[in-house]
Image (tube, rainbow over all chains, first blue to last red; front, side, top):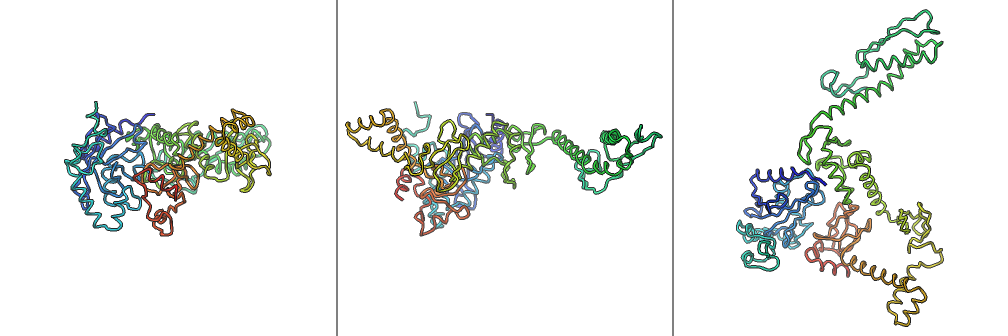
Length: 181
Length: 373
């Protein structure tokens, strides 16, 4: 099974050229983090998220997996795992899509137009439908608490803590790989 | 009506639609011993036919005389036969030439494949019939092979997300792209998925056969395999036991239950009656089946259309069957209208009202929850 090797390189280069901050994992083009900024004119504005991207060996025939590392309050993003529920990066993925589509169109669109009828975060969905103002406040609160530049930098594999401050002190089997023997 | 496309030997580059062509001139002389011994001396002149077409046409005309010798064939030349040539041969010739020229243009052209983003010569590319979208052969093959290998055959269509033609590719195209073996698997999977969504289809219980068998009527329980002619019962999947005889499977279940609950004495009696090995196997199978059933019941929901057991890994309870694309509810297993999928969860009369995301985060919760619904 061959995959267009150059596509992976081209896509990562395109991300870098479009001024995205990309951190490669293990110098491997197939796994990296992208710093993602909340779109303007939305309650997510000003937020910074570290988004984990993993390109499968069969990329772009298969879609990449996308996950938010630091917390975000959004109906279609799982609060604990950061998994994103978005048809275009799952069932209706096309091999003609690329990273730029994801970071410049799909994700900003998802934040701008959440779909509360198909939620991964039930609380966020319910709040958005019943009390839009409270939803907006909670989104902003999360942005202030969890989506600062520092929080995005500090976010690691286990972002399930309630408090940002506990990220550093928290340590158990979920600690980052650098702490393992 | 003839369409000229591509401007190779023709006027400009614009397609040209013509109803009339300049005439074909037949310049002839009749030798004195015509038509008995010599043929008509003739030559064709035509400004729009290629020289090899003209030669071919001349040969055909000559053949008429050779076949019929003593018949006066001039009239035939200018009427019947030429009419035929104009209607069929010429049309074929033109179409063939047009296709050849188009293919040649395609092969010599360069295309940027929208998948690997590499520019490749036409001979390394493939143009999809229906939508005319072009991709490189490697990408189309690898992408389609991945989809077929993983069973996503309904996704095998033009990879362009903006493509309006949502139609399936023809079998010939698929074979050309992924080869015979994969194309066969594609067809098999597609047919299998079609059969699986058919509630009146089962599979021949003979392990060596396993051909799909369609039940003739909804009430009849006798099935006869169309491939190996094995007659079996629809319900118990065993050799046909006649209409009046109850299905053996109930009996076996009872035996197994009886055996499992029995004391040592009864056990050995049952072993004597049914054979130790048989009993052992039955018990083993029954336990396995129970375990599987238990797991399936608590971890999956059946698609109401094709009955494929679907395990939800995450997300809400609005499910889309990966096999037949049927929309259904993960809680109650009922079909959901794809036009209004969420009305099922917003209807106060529905048992799933306001439960769209019940158990979305905690797996165990989902499992326990829907068993008792």
